[in-house]
Length: 326
Ligand code: TRP
Ligand code: SF4
Image (tube, rainbow, N blue to C red; front, top):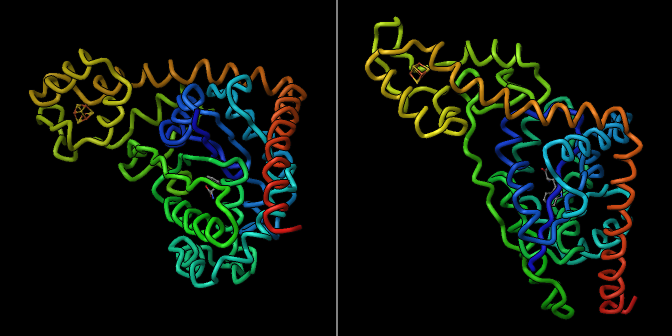
């Protein structure tokens, strides 16, 4: 069975439907098809948020709760905390020896973040080198595939280049990992733009049924449908993108027809979809509430995952050290 590694930064942000239908459901599916390692990339948080490390511990626990509540199962995947596996730092150091600085300077995310995260000094060594840390995260477990969104694809490309250089310079011990592109069904937010916390257009996994109903009831629709009597076109309606994800074929047929003939109003149309969103989130919220009452259990999941990851990491590092004569 192939191995998969992926990480998420525990930034403390609330997860929303975009995360659920992008990365998380994908992870949940993958746990049955691969050896999966999923980790809280807490050192990665420090590459940008080095000045405010106070909540890392708590946010790591929080993200682990999120993962468990959406269906990651510690029996079927390894859930761990990056900073608990010191081998990542050692491998990062060794990979940094063979990584040319121009490869890092060329990284599109690097340039973009420096431009966008204003008010923060990101001219640091750690920030430039974080893709090397990411490469270490990935090759530590000899991953064959890395499920990430398009934004992270250049990092995996860089990992492949580093692996090739390592394997050629020393001896071939690492597989070249492939990107497993998360088909982010581009989930529109309430205003039709990509769902994002910073756009203030998100439905959070923690929203109550009432909040979900209120938010989605005012979600943007086909702008041509001004009055109830104006026919609309579902394909031009952001809300309908959610119907496509959530509704049965019969429901989609019903609302599409109703929209095009002005047979139903937008609110009635949305209610058909809202019901499913609420239903999907209910068990997630229940699980989450239960976990919040038993944080010790979640800590234990992480501790067990750390032990498993540690085992594999120490095997890999033994091989690396031997290869380099260390
Ligand atoms: N850099 C990723 C992000 O910001 C998180 C990450 C760290 C990661 N290490 C990884 C993802 C290894 C996949 C594999 O989202
Ligand atoms: Fe969108 Fe439904 Fe309104 Fe048509 S009826 S514009 S699909 S919300």
